[in-house]
Image (cartoon, rainbow, N blue to C red; front, side, top):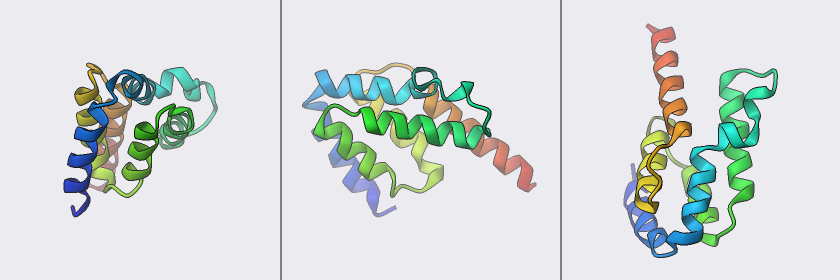
Amino acid sequence: MMFRPLLGGLVVALVTACGSYKRDMEDACHAVERSKARELPIAEEEILTRAASWAAERARTSDGQMFWAAIVNINPQDKAKVLRDAAKEAGVVDCPLADALEATLRADELKRQ
């Protein structure tokens, strides 16, 4: 939780570089499709990890790189919201990677019940 204020400031700072940063966030949100990770014969969790790694490696801006460096330290339950909020601030409307992260968390919760 101590990272939320840091991320709030980070999101505001990132919006100032919206043009290129928006492309970084589009790549992040659409990483599963663009990375072709789903074509690999691996588990869903690994697909999401590979897709996120692909997007992090493709980050063209220092702001995009800072986003990926910061999100690594976020609680897994908060990552989808942080990603979705950052994407929205950058002008990205839909975020399939955030949707997939939320679905995986729900599935994991059902398994534990």
